[in-house]
Length: 420
Image 1 (tube, rainbow, N blue to C red):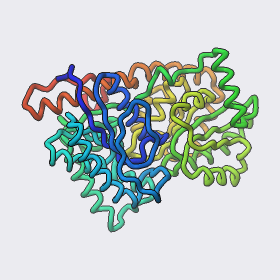
Image 2 (cartoon, one colour):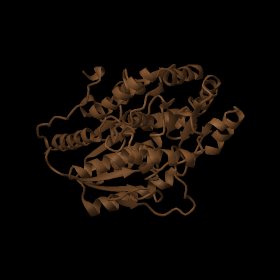
Image 3 (spheres, rainbow, N blue to C red):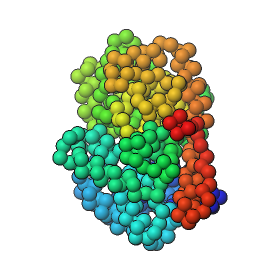
Image 4 (cartoon, rainbow, N blue to C red):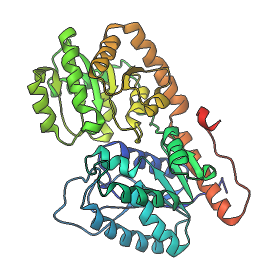
């Protein structure tokens, strides 16, 4: 079975494609699976950007929702009903071998279609449902809805034939806290296209592009640049990054912070203004994924101050592939991806984050060593080529388990000690 090609119906209950981490993982997985010879068909919400070469079927148009729906939203209740209908119709049409569901809403939609049509279901788990709601402020811990939603999450976690997590930390969470069977739990780490995300090579063409982008962004000459690329939100540590920036600039006034992403750009521009650092902070908003590598190439240092305890941190793999020294808050997921090739700030500590940024800017030998070892780590452990092989093998194992055949092995990355 491992050498076979499959028809895969990917279920993405989100405004695919929008340029942020969750969508990047979905897109890179689909593209890699296509390169391995599989047919990938996707169902998703009515809005979002089409991606080249990917067969996308969208749910009914909802004219009053044009913006990208990020995170938890009350609108998702009827959007998911529409997506369920579209997914069932597409499944009857294309007759997939595998349902590959993203996010918990996708797991629920996929479970219904799986039961009706007898199809195996893979759940691509990118974080806790209730954890995300808490992160986005959609739910309060201990509220009347918290316990029922945790009960719903427990049911959803147990419906698939297999679960793929983006980190060993998430797999450990599912195994220990939600009691998901270990023999149906797999980890395919957040990965990166290492051919496109690569260090600045010093070529005249790339240098000219760097200078063009720098001028377009209005970043003065002579400033060293700290880059961030991702969603802008409290749980992403955006506010704490700006607070740390104020401390860094007090000691390193020739530094500039390029904080790329969305939503709420105006909120963080106001914060930068209030902190008195607006002249040293550029918030350009959404950066198209196809251009991310060019903007990251402007950086001397990269930061990943994410505060979530349950979600992955795909941006770190991108930073490593770019050959950038990386500073992150000390979380299990950050440790898992960075290992000993990053610098860690105490969790949620603005002063510690500022200290680590200053260290990376001051100690150029250390920064160069981290950049080189980080690039090597990205190529060896975080390439999508290996990720695609792992997912293909997981499909094969799931189909084999359903039919009673021997289970083929799954190619592994460097194994996490918790699963050794």
